[in-house]
Image (cartoon, rainbow, N blue to C red; front, side, top):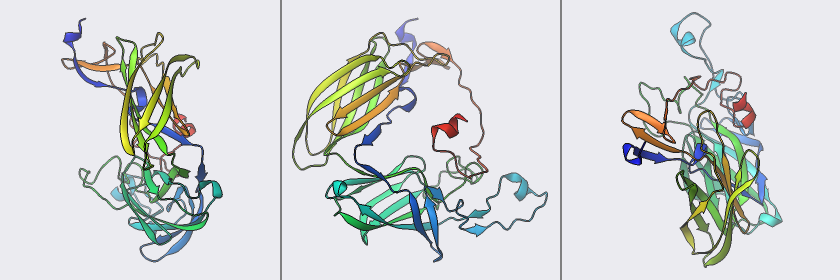
Amino acid sequence: MTQNMFSKISLFTGFVAGICFTSFSQTMSVAGKWLAELSSGQVAEIELPGTLDMAGIGIPDSLKIEMAKPQLLRLTRKVSYIGPCKYIRTIEIPKDMAGKPLRLKMERVLWKSTLVIDDKPINQENISLNSPHFFEIPPLNQGKHIFEITIDNRCQRDISFSNLCHSYTNDTHTIWNGVLGDFTLSVVPTVEIARINVYPDIRKESIEVDMTVNNVSNRKENRNIKLTIKDKGNGHVVGNASLKYTASPGISNLKTIIKLDNPELWNEFSQPLYRLAATAGDSFAETTFGMREVATDGKSLLINRHKTFLRGTLDCCVFPLTGVPPTDKEGWTK
């Protein structure tokens, strides 16, 4: 089977292509009790991460119990709310985080969010149904600050068909208002590894690493970037590299190729995975990838030159006990 038989369509970084998991040494959770202020003026206390539904806040269900289409078509929420909701809390910035650029992360939010701190708007707007919402916050003084997060779960883009859309409909998961998953405030390193993409080359047994580096200072910064690749199954190091890099202010890109030590190819029955960890000063990021190449041969889909048929199940992401999908590994494993 020769290479010219294939029409290559994509190269993947395993299961999380282009997703960079970044951790910071200075991070605090902002989970806890917040005040929720609805557009109607109603104010109630709510636990975040969580949703208005979980707190019983919103318009009560008015459907009668009977064998009719609205009752049988889908599960019905006990309470529901579509519109903007302002979440308010006083957050105390500790001494070791004061005077440094910060980042607020909200993992699962529908659909638009804005942020005001001490009556001063942070001039950013997040619009996303699945990616985390981030706010880059200028340095704050040590002490108490009032955070006001407005989350608007009204439709922001017409992406539905007959009012149905997997990411935004009560027929699958609900159209919740709130925050789920990670809810943290972190110090942003001066030089941050903001993104890692990994592109496997199965013939050369190597990967191309494409990194985005963000320098938040106003001067050039020298960094040694250490890259380590480990077999996720046994923890053995199968590749590494060390790069000296001068990061200019703002965002820049860095690429390198790393040869792996006898990597195993990914397939649907045997799924060896590798973890790339990148360290630059106080910035750490990692991503997981598999050695696989996706191609086509006529109408057939090929993974690492083997014909593959994609299949799966459909559960419509219905979670009647909570109304929202889980955000932890244990929930999805179950």
